[in-house]
Image (cartoon, rainbow, N blue to C red; front, side, top):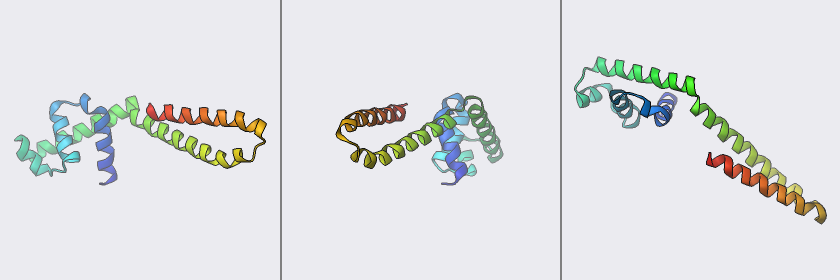
Length: 124
C-alpha cells in the first residue's frame, strides 16, 4: 500500500461518516477495495471522469477535515508519547534493581503508576 493510499484509508476511517454517500462509496471502493476508476464507474454507473472528480472532491474534503479537526495528528502524537513512555519504563527496570531496599519499594510504586498511565494513554 502506498503512502497516499494509507493516508486516505486512515482519514476515511476517522472522517468517512462526514462525507456524502457517493464520496464514501468512491473512497471505499478505490482505497479499501482497490477498484480502478473504470471499475468504480461501472459499479456506480457514472463516467470514469465523474469517478475521478468525486474521488478528488472526497480527498479534498478528508484533507480539510483533518486540517480543521486534527484527529489523526492527535492520535499519532498520542502513540509517539506512549512509545516514549514505554521506552522510559523499560530503561528504568535495571536501575531499580540496584536501589537499596528502602528506596526500592517507593520506586516500584512510582514505576507501577507510570505503567498504569501508559495503559490509560493507550486506551484513549
